[in-house]
Length: 115
Image 1 (cartoon, rainbow, N blue to C red):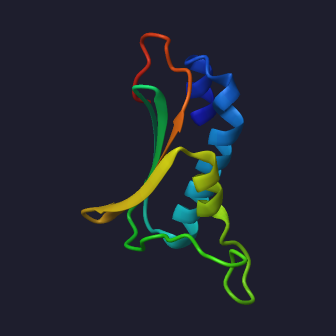
Image 2: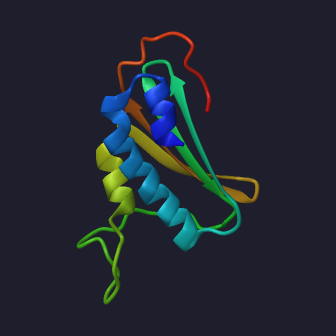
């Protein structure tokens, strides 16, 4: 979905970082969330906004140190999203958790909207 929308907008240069970011965010939603997962991408002025929402109650947080819990694997996803974005955040809306990121891009072409 992300690749197709970016291609439709002519933003091929943004595919690699945004596909990586959506992969990390969806993985977090699968591992830590519950229920259905919704992915949205849109143009907001001069930025691409990516949102991943799940029906879980957990609020993700960036881990410090080596990125993983003792004896575990993972923990780098949100740090990676932070490095790929100009701004990002997490919030609760009713019974859902939403993690979003925004990345500046040349979005000057007309007729770009929500996917």
